[in-house]
Length: 146
Image: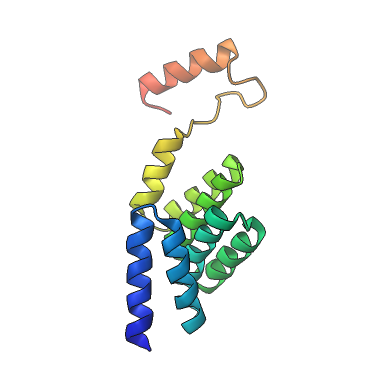
C-alpha cells in the first residue's frame, strides 16, 4: 500500500510539474483515497480548482492541510494559486508572503516575480500615481531606503 501511494504521488507531482493538472488530479484523488496526507490534500485542492472549478472545496482542503502542517510553505503556494484562479490577487499575494515567511520556497518566488508585486505607496492616503508618491518612491528607491 505504501509503494502504491508513493508511486501515485510521484506520478502526480511529475504531471503537475509538466502542467498536466488533469492527470495530476486523477493520481492525487486516488492517493488521497488511500491515505489523507496534507501535502497530497493541498496539491489535490489546486488541481480541483484548476480542472473542476471547485474553488470553495479547494480552499477548504488547502486550509485543512495548513491546519495540519502550518509550517509548510508548499500549502501556501497552492492556496495562493487557487486564489489566483479565482481572480483574488490580493489574497494570493498574502498567501504567498506567508509561505515565504516560513521558508524560501522557489515556486513562490517565481510566482511573485511573475505577478510583479509592487511596493506599497509612500503615502497610502494618496493615489499610487500621485506626484508625491511617484517622486518620493523613486527617490527612496535610488537612495536604497525602500
